[in-house]
Length: 254
Image (tube, rainbow, N blue to C red; front, side, top):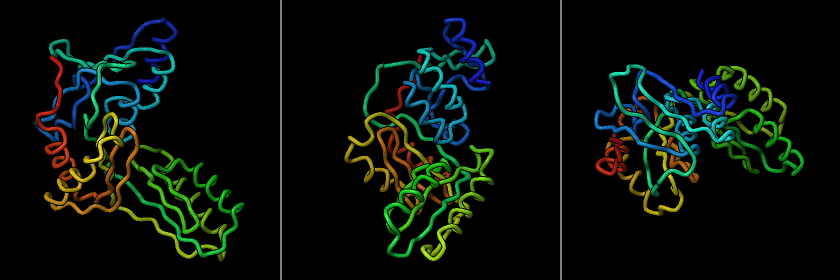
């Protein structure tokens, strides 16, 4: 596995070369976005964000281990006749903005609504219990809670659903309603300084609206601007966002 390869490289004090059926990391899945280009280099944090968002070139755990050990990863094609690579390392030359679009087609939104009056201690306990589920973009407040569960990236997705159901039952009369919304996808714009680009959300939302994609939720952090959409509209969203936010801006390696 990727993680085993990185661990072996760490033991040998060497960098790590990982070979697959693609010659590096692209600005989107080339099978879905023909104009996607290979990225010459990425830092560890960006690669981890891409992996968590659904890019399948490298596992997030392997990249995290490489960062901890200070190991550069060279992602290359398994065929020696295919030249090109993406280097994942610390502090590469980088500019603010979106570098890649990734998506996860198998998202379930878990949510609950609370009746007024839940104590601070009970709310803190609820937050801890939900936090242990490992949901993405988890929100907990006095009105309720919600988070995203990836069925494709987790082998324990069914168990997480069961634990969520048990948590809601434990709320008793404090629970107003609980939901598990299927057939969703998460489409993420990954890059550097995302939160510093004030114009980025509006530009992305306009691109999705023009493509006829209905936005269910929007999330932002330092590395990602992410949209929850219907699974049936995932591909249209990926293509529209790549065209508008990356397009000619993409920076291929040689």
